[in-house]
Amino acid sequence: MAFAPMGPEASFFDALDRHRASLLAMVKRGAGETPAGATRVASRFDDSVGLRMIPQCTTRKIRSDSPKSVKKFALILKVLSMIYKLIQSDTYATKRDIYYTDSQLFGNQAAVDSAIDDISCMLKVPRRSLHVLSTSKGLIAGNLRYMEEDGTRVQCTCSATATAVPTNIQGMQHAKFLLIVEKDATFQRLLDDNFCSRMSPCIMVTGKGVPDLNTRLLVKKLWDTFHIPVFTLVDADPYGIEIMCIYKYGSMSMSFEAHNLTIPTIRWLGLLPSDIQRLNIPKDSLIPLTKHDQMKLDSILKRPYITYQPLWKKELEMMADSKMKAEIQALTLLSSDYLSRVYLPNKLRFGGWI
Image (spheres, rainbow, N blue to C red):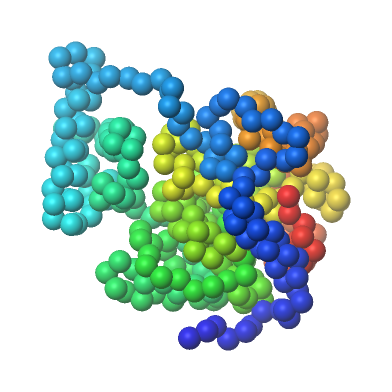
């Protein structure tokens, strides 16, 4: 059963359709995103996958006869025994469930999280293969139907109500594009403004800041299934850009699972530092970069994948030169619904992404 058309005319999506065609051609070639003339660097970065663990990476040993690592060794054995039981019984547990089985032994949730990541890396398997799940914090809305692993059928809507990101999905429907929204407040505002209905068919996702594993897995599966354009809407600040980079290129802590989590074809839709100047956003709505912001920005500019993104680099340098940042909410100073009725529709219609 197809969704009834509610959004703009088909011609509105011409730029998106051309972009999708180029993405499909790239997928067919099996190509990455290396610009003409760029040279690959010997690093942890693979332009077609993202940040990944290199074979010659530093390793560490955890010994049962060493006072420094005996507790860590015991925790890993404990978690391994629980994983074995989960796999044998074909059941699943969250990291929180595992912690509460023996909270005195583990001490804190971080110890469990670290042990599970170590086991996943050591065995070179995704966490889901260990039958260990994360508790979802993300939300999803739009033109999407799917079936959960237990057979439950879920239909997301274009209304003001979102659905929690599932831990696993079996089947999905189609949309023109996927928009990843950094912050929950912006996500909810777009729902309240009926953005999904007016831009239908589309899907919106938020990880409520730094995305959890389930949100990243869902975004990856949507890309792998549909190969539709994926865009990010983040604050024009170093931490918003960092979150976008996690979706696109991954993180060092999960580099051993990059091929299951990253979408290198993601595009930056907004808020761009150049948009601040182009739209004449009032200066009193801008925020000076803090010392930590400047350190984060310098760190991002030095990362190997910025070599492959000259337009991103230009935007980051513009932010560094101005020493100012802006939140998405700054657009409300132009008008209360400027984001949903003007900014995003124009960006999507005319290809205003990088």
